[in-house]
Image (cartoon, rainbow, N blue to C red; front, side):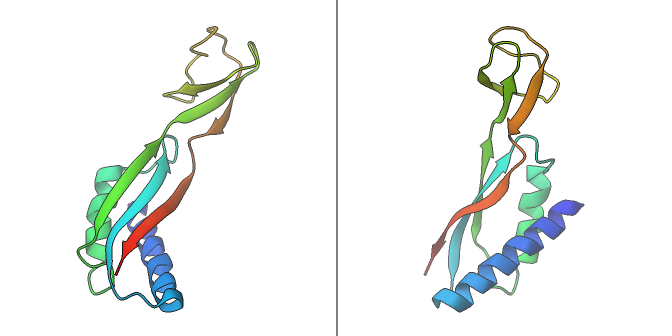
Length: 113
C-alpha cells in the first residue's frame, strides 16, 4: 500500500511547516491528486488518519481534490480532458494523444491554528 508512504510524506511536510511557521494544530489538509497518479483515495484517507496520530494534524480532515487527466491531441492540436490514458480525443476521435497532466500530487493548502 503506497498510500501509507504518501501519508508519511504529507506528515513530514506538515511537521516541517509547523516548525518553520510556529503553528500547533492542523484542522484541514487539502491535497490535489491527478486522475492518473495511481492513488487509491479511500486507502489514502485511511492511511492519513493512522499516520497523523500523535502529530499536529491528528484528527485533521483530509480533502482530496481530483484533477482531471489532460492530453495534447496530435490530430487536432487541442489539449483535452480524458478519463483514461488510452481514450481517444473527445473532440476529433483521434488516437495520437500525449498526456499533459493528471499524474500530479501536491498539498494545496492547510487550515492551521
